[in-house]
Length: 223
Image 1 (cartoon, rainbow, N blue to C red):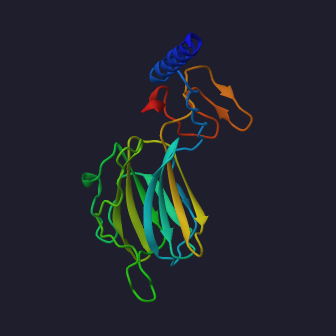
Image 2: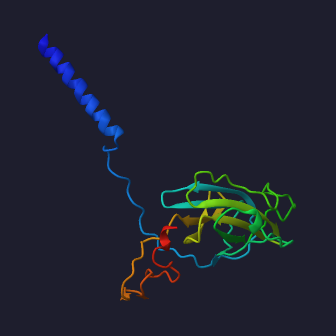
Image 3: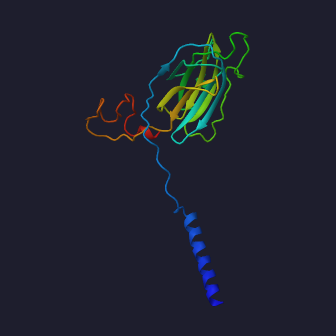
């Protein structure tokens, strides 16, 4: 009987010890760091004007970046994205006074927001609408629709600071297509002062990364 009681008491003590360690955050491996992102904040463009109508936009959070996706009913490919104050299509109203974010991206999609055969509107928002809920996002602060005119459709994307981004096109689902905008949560790698150095493909100076001609100055990558 005494042996059973001793075993039970030992189990209780061990359980309490494990619980204390878990509550102190000492159990489990640390989260894996982000891989290096060799994007830039330079303007990006690609594709050509087409007639696939925009039908939806959505946002999502990822480990190292926030994402905005524009979906089309058909094969879209054209875009122009750059940092700068966006204006609405046709009217040209400045969107910046009505947007959140430490920096603004102007996104111009080379496709309409309507079916050019029937004239039916396919994207159910009006110019000036805030079209995303970005609560708890690390980088995204706002996504505002700027309207569409003569096959060009504009969005303003507010972000925390001027950060590197990339744009690419995906096919699907089905006959649809998507233009994807990813904005990094920070500059990587951390840049440190030091003498000029050379990598395999291009010369780099202190505060720059190979292949990234507009990397921020030392220390600003953490913004």
